[in-house]
Length: 220
Picture 1 (cartoon, rainbow, N blue to C red):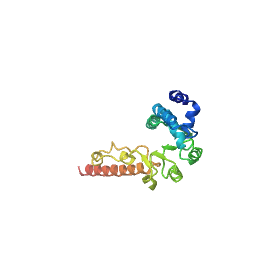
Picture 2: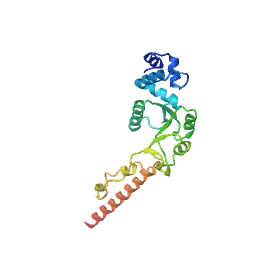
Picture 3: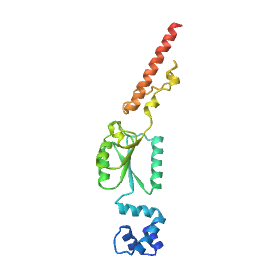
Picture 4: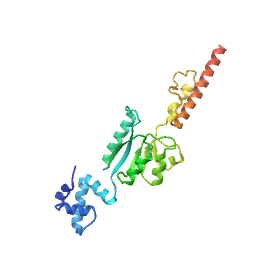
């Protein structure tokens, strides 16, 4: 990874001069400043560091690793890997921190106040997620894998799987008397109302199919 010394050597100036240019301080001639900035642009990563100094940014994104999550979660493992790859491609790093409860806003407040991160990526979202409220009101940038199922979802950026559609049987199943392929295992989901709504629809479809099956049997 290029360092400030690499920039200095390439530009033919001292390390102190590079530092003054990056911090926009000192009596540096326009020609020297331009030469240093051109080297900064060529070296990429150093350019990100320079921009972070000028903009007072950490160039770091925070992500909470919920201690209560299952050890094997291929979806979130792949999600975290994608975050890391894309962050690095844009000159940023990811701070992965552990939390007993990933929805507790205390750790988010602490990291944001200390300017250790510029924003957060959230996961393990819940109904009325308190992190949405705190981060939105505090003006801290964030995106989420999941939603809060509140009006705030219309104001922030999030992506999610369609839990309701995932639980609702397709027409080819719900219109038939074969209910064996409808997944009602595990009971009604308590955490996500969207998935719960799909579960309720599935129950209604299965019940209707069972009634049709009974009517067909009794009439034969």
